[in-house]
Image (tube, rainbow, N blue to C red; front, top):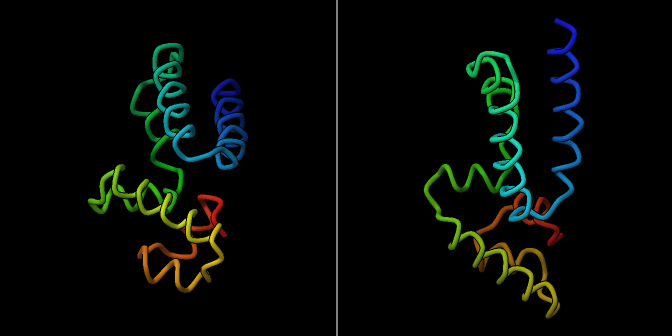
Amino acid sequence: MKPWDDFLEDWSKIQEILNLIEITKKIDLIENMQDYIFKSRKEDHKKLEEAIMGKRVLTAYERTLEEGIGIGEMNTKLETARKMRDKGFSILEIQEFTGLSDEELNENGIL
C-alpha cells in the first residue's frame, strides 16, 4: 500500500502548489494532470476519482461554476473587479457591483 500512500501525499503537495496558480491556468493544468494520472496509475479508477476529486475542497470559483454561473460570466466579473480595484474602488464597492464575495476576490488575487 506504500505507493498509494506516496501518491496521496504527493497529490496533496501538488494541490498546495496549484492553489497558488491563476485560476484559468490551474483548471487546464488540473485537467491535464488528471488525464495523465488516470492513464498511468494502476489503481482502480474509482479510488483515483476519490483521491483526486472527492477529497478536495472546491474553490469559490469552482463552487460558483457548480451553482450555474458560466465560466464566461465569472471571468467577466473577475475582470471587472480587477479594473475597479486598479481604479481605486473600495472592496465593498467592488463586491456590490460584481456580486463577488471576499473569498472569490481573494482566491483570484484581487484583494
